[in-house]
Amino acid sequence: MTEPIDAAPALNEKLDGWCRANGLRFTVATAEHVGAEWTIAEQHLQAYGIVHGGVHCGVIETLASVGAAVFASARGQTVVGLENHTSFIRAVRIGEKLTAEARPITRGKRTQVWEATIANQAGETIATGRVRLLCLEPGTVVAGEAPRSGVGARKSV
Image (cartoon, rainbow, N blue to C red; front, side, top):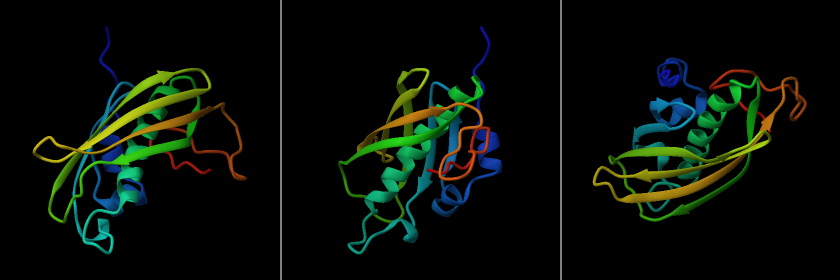
């Protein structure tokens, strides 16, 4: 049995703007499991001094999208997100280090569903989410432009 391809080093070498701005670092990125870590900083906070829920949504969607893209790329497909349902469990403040893990729930020819959990250093769940993604055939045009191929390609919806 062959080892799964881990795209984390390539992703970390060439982070997209959102991941770079949020300080996200991938720890693993395969078709079966995607993990990342980051430390909460000023740019993650909302007016009450806690992490903005959109950060959790964005991390969950990013990990699901990366895992789905790794899986779909073997079939020549790209992916775009269709739904993101994120639940916020605990508030987080500046300086805390968080980790996120995502795994597939189902992967069909046309859609995939991934589930993710964000935790703090004590292992407490901070947020959970599920993302449904559409698998696009090569050459599919989305929002007036064909998606770029490859893992970590920017998605346009």
